[in-house]
Length: 433
Image 1 (tube, rainbow, N blue to C red):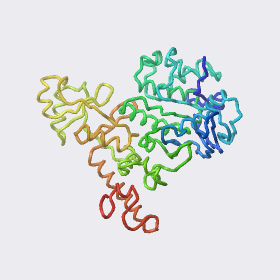
Image 2 (cartoon, rainbow, N blue to C red):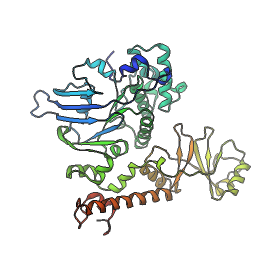
Image 3 (tube, one colour):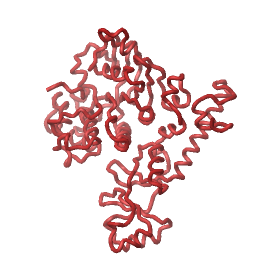
Image 4 (tube, helix red, strand yellow):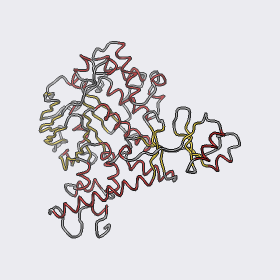
């Protein structure tokens, strides 16, 4: 069987980091790349040229740059799927450059595009692979499989026995992440893991990763060509030129408001003010309550609740308390004793970890002026409406205008012209450019 690069830490293998075994989960590890270079034979230029970088323990760092620029090569040198020509790799201070690469990969989780699951193995067998390799007991492995499926929002009873071909693309990616985390590695490498799924599924997978990181605090290094995805996921973003030369390595806020040069500005692109919405989560704004009923409520009770409510609408929840339909008074008058034909199906929801941009898009598509917010199992937790979103946008833009004005007064920007690309998008005292 070929060696899989998903893996665990030595601490996990020895003392047990899984909560199923009663121990605390392993936290992230610091990574230092020192003058890392990859030169392929016959190529006059290195694919990765003398890269030095510090990645802090527990943070998510995103590599973004042009195709063919060396992002994936740089990522794969961290777990030595690609061996560096020169330079050093240190993880939590330990030089792993000369370590047995198989043992190293068992300390580093790895998730790729299209999940990389073994098709002849069930979901449970895929997730259990590395814990078995490092010698976990059968009962502990079984507990970990259950825990991992629950962690990524898949019902263990429903999914553990399925094969990858029986899963949707989004489900496969969730299992891929579960497998990468199964043996509790401190470091997780992700190479465009959501690039092969549809945009809606991709948004949900991004939200799921954000939620997982809030719980697990791993060190995540993530490769993408999508700058919006980088803004949404990254604590810091490394914008890489050809040969992985670092054009700018900073927080999303700093890159949006103060790109280092024209190359970085090209990645930021137009609409920086809108991209700013990717930096604020739904959990950071007011999530309002909304009158709800369930499919099991008597029809007369639904009539009475809608008549007594201040608004003109109810949210109908299914038996699992997931948003199902929006009901208006006129819908109920046509129900004729049944809810089957009444109301409008809920087409989109957002989680607390979704960005304000996700929420705004959902509100605009739905045209009802609101979007339902759900928990990890899809259960209803509240709504966010257009007024809340617009107030948040205005507050962010005002804060950015004040920051830009302070920067200009300190000599950071010219007084005339508002040449900074973010200020142009946000609109300064002379209006948008």
